[in-house]
Every structure is written in C-alpha cells, then in structure tokens.
Image (cartoon, rainbow, N blue to C red; front, top):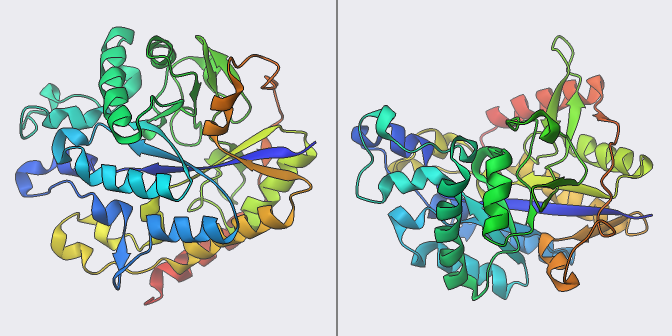
Length: 344
C-alpha cells in the first residue's frame, strides 16, 4: 500500500504584529511574505513552484482570503493566477484577525479587536466569516473551495459545523504540535477524522525527543525538521501503514527571518535566501520522486473529482505516534544554529 503525501503550503500576508503594533508604524506586508524576492527572483512562492515543477509534483496551496480586508482582492489574486497557471491546487485559508481592518485601522484597545483564533467564534459567526472568504476565493478561482485550513490551526466543533454550513467537505485544521483543538476527541497527531460532517486530515506530527526536554509533538514542517527527520518520519509512517501524511510549509520560510522580525519596507530589502530550508524541501521532493513505489503525492483538490466522499475513501484509524530520534533532534538544532549564523 502506498502512503499518500500531501505537501501543503499556507500562502498568507503578515498580520499579528501589524495589528498589535499598528500605532507604532507597523503595517501588513504581502509580497515580502509570498514572493520573497531576493536579488530580483522569488525565493518564496517562486522557489516552491520551480522545485515542484522539477520533480513533477503538485501541492495544495491554502491561500488566505481575509487579508483582502486590508489589501483588496487584486494583490493575492495575482499569486492565485500564478498558482493555477502552474497547475497547482488552490484551497482556502482564513485568518479572522484581518477583519480588524474592515472599517479602517484596528482598534487601539486589544479588548475590542477580533480574535485570530477561529475556535473563539460561534458557529453562526464563523459561517458568516467563512462565507465571505468563500466568495473572495470564488472571485479568484471561479469555484468554491473544496478544503479549508484555519489560521494558526485554531480549531473546534464550531469550525467544522461552519464549514459544513458553507459546503466545504475537507479540512486540515488540526496540528497538535502548534495548537490543540478545544475538544479532546480532535487532538490527533495524524489520520483522518470525521468531524461534524467534515473530513479532517491533521497536519502530521511526531513525538520530538530532544535530550533535556519532555517529549512533545512537533509538526512535519520544513522549518521544524531536518531533512533526515522528514524522510525518516515518512518511512516510519509507511511502515505503520498510514494512508496519509500531511507536510506543512510557508513561502516565507525559504528566506531569512530578519525581515519578518520587523515588518517594515526597509527591512525587507535585507532578506537572504535560507539555503538550509530550501535544501530540506528539495530533499523531500527528491525522496518522494525516487520512492514512488511507496509514496504517492496527492492534493486535497484531487478528491473533488470523486463526487460524494464516504468512509470508503478515508481510513479513520488510531495510529501509534510517530517517534522522533534524540540524535536527529540534536543534529537538527546544531544545523539550525550554524545556518542562522552564516552570512548567506
């Protein structure tokens, strides 16, 4: 049996610091978080598309729609066109905090601001917010989204119910290595879950066993794992008979973080390529291409052609947690430290 691997990319603008420190002159940035141009070439989204094309692979790009409250539809729409032209899968991503810009600058009083956690909202509120984002998405793509991912993986029963109300059948809203869902029954590190009429496939997490720390879940995220950890976890998942593995990344992970620590235009000019992270992504894509006998790269959009999705399509099973290696964790920390100090 082949393990289906979903390469998922959250495509979004900066939001949190822009809201919390708007009065200090911090403003949202889009192009430097998506294109991530370095030396006149896109090392974020462009790098992802070049690499996927080289290995003949397709990823699911969860494109954030609520940021149109600040930027309007056209800037992100250009990136959606680029993704569609490249034959990639485009689905919906939602950060509710962007609605703080609906009537102008965000409130200076934190108590009056809208939360960025979808789990903080009622089913009715989310049905309205998701519905607005669906229409924005439809304007970009000419269709409704087939899958959704919430910002910061904030999730709960109200999220799934609102998705069902909006006719969105698939999601990847759970990542226990980043944010635990409100309801304990949804706190799963991997495997499909049937939730309020929606099929949920969590971002796959493994137990990180870094020496000197308590074991904790860590996502299979390009910045969070070394290349050897990523392939080792893929092999382990395949050996355990996991039907699906969900990988996670963002375009801005492939450039150095200094420009994001202080999101102002002058800082974005000093972005550098994050060669370590780019090499990790290339390593994973090459590994999947070299082992098609065991892995199949899929997208969430692939399921849209299957009509009514039922239990026969997805295996709802409790898998044992993927186990990280202490040695690999130490090597990962060392390589990250060295990379952060290199001048390239």
